[in-house]
Structures are given as C-alpha cells and as structure tokens.
Amino acid sequence: DTNAFLVDLSAMLPPSDMNWLVIGDFNLMRAPTNKNNTNFNQRLADKFNSMIDGLALIELPLLD
Image 1 (cartoon, helix red, strand yellow):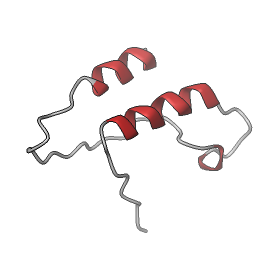
Image 2 (cartoon, rainbow, N blue to C red):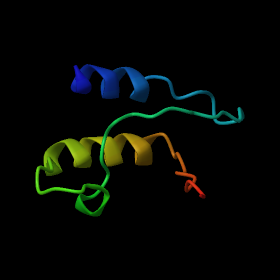
Image 3 (cartoon, rainbow, N blue to C red):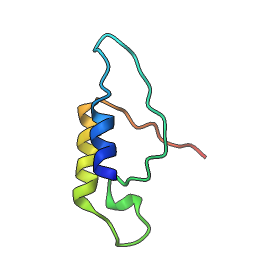
C-alpha cells in the first residue's frame, strides 16, 4: 500500500557524505494544482511531502 511504500522509501536515507538520486513516477500528488479533478487526498500529499523533506530530495521539473 502507499503508506508502506512511503515508510520504506523514508528508510532509504543514505549517509550524509553520499550523493544519491531517486528516480521514479510515484503516482502521488504533492498539491491540488497537480490534479485535474477535485479528488485530492491532502493527508496523503502531506505524508508524501514530509517524506520528500525528510530525505532532502529536490524535485526536478519536467521540461517539454
């Protein structure tokens, strides 16, 4: 399930002296503006954003 995925991903934090890269299409929304309808789960978005912040990840924008 999604919660287990976020827990597992959060546990992957490498040592602070190591560079790393996370690539994937997580099928999770970070904000309502990323959604094309009103079916948005704020609680899940908050968990996803918290995981991103906790791992100090930077989202690279898609171009074209």
